[in-house]
Length: 421
Image (cartoon, helix red, strand yellow):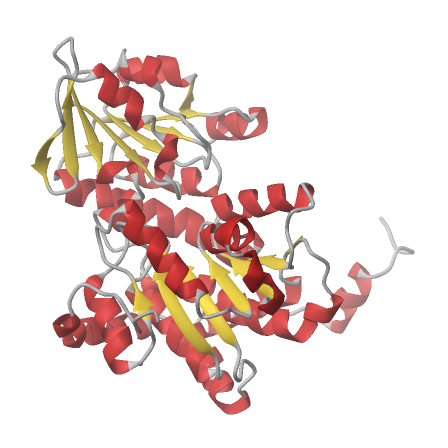
């Protein structure tokens, strides 16, 4: 029988609860959803296995699902992203089984996913599609219980769409990342700020005057580039998509191939969702003292084995979350957070106010899935646009911001074709 939780230290619970409550103050949209869920119980009795970053914001999502009547189990979606005090509080104060320890090894990480799957989920909630992947690869006997799932990240959505294209996906999944109130805000403003936060906490370096290379100009890359420039850095963007490269150029950034950028960059940040974006031939031409980190979901964006092959001996831990590799030609290359998400490995992840919208999407996606599962095919869906609009409206309302509404005349004008110039 699986033990009911596996966390680092239950005695951390009190501090975790204080931080969960602090984050809750910045999450008014999710709070309103929780209040409605408490009354209506739309998730009553539904088993949910969630594989997410165990942070204060996630704790507030778990409390919302629980308020809606769900039977929730939580495991970590990354070995370095867990906040141990939050995990302790969820177990102690909310009686939610949590399987997550900051710094857990790979075997423990997957054993925690297995523990969450032993819950026999009816709904999955993923941040990177590891639960869905494990279900389909190794726990297919549990597929009979699954109604559907939700997915938080760009990387996870890419994996799920590949599964659907192959005809391998065995239940419908809602791509929460597709919602405008998720990717336009969480990915851009959240990732932008928290990535810079993680780099600065790990290194304590001054960004002003440095050359920062951002690999990928999707919503995350846009945010990172903007925040780095705001701190006074000279920013270079690398891309494979000509439209995104053109956009980066017209946004005022230098654009070039990674091999050229590798020769001049001081700090490198990957945010693409792809493999070996920084590869051996890039390491070979980097400056002495270059700093390399990743803000994509998986650590495969940086070819760490290639860096190890170029180096002499084991890396030296020169600061928490900073591994310094000495290359055979005498250069030092600094890898942050073991190549995992730097904003969660070395910092606290996104601010609660932006996760408010992302997790509002998660909560409403769970409700939507249960209401509509019998109509949905085994593929990846987006939440309806009206859900996006409602979340944005609630967020503005909570911020005390008012906007115009269409007059009847304006509405009619936009919905006809007879009138022109």
